[in-house]
Length: 108
Image 1 (cartoon, helix red, strand yellow):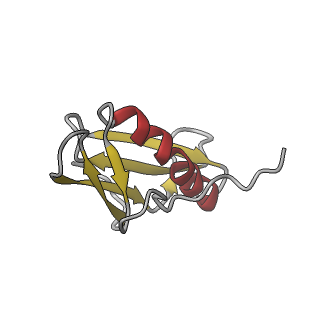
Image 2: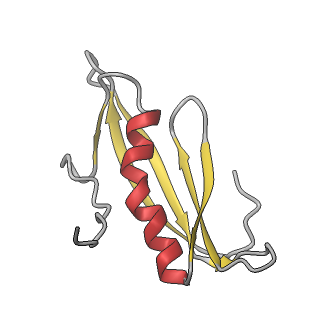
């Protein structure tokens, strides 16, 4: 899907079942290793791609350094999946509801 110049992405394969069905469908989440943002004054960006729904998803997440950009993508993936998944669908990873994407460690 991507013409991304970074050579590696971290990939997670989730399983989706639709409400009222036992069919399992794979949903692929890729978070590309961060790269310098080419915009003037830009910091870093990490591309998040999600395949397995009717419309593929692709968007950059930005940060002041490589780790910040990567984590911004990781933290946002669960919300993106909720928006893309059909109503009543269940997403699992390794048979569990916890999809394994870390939450922000910010303390209010």
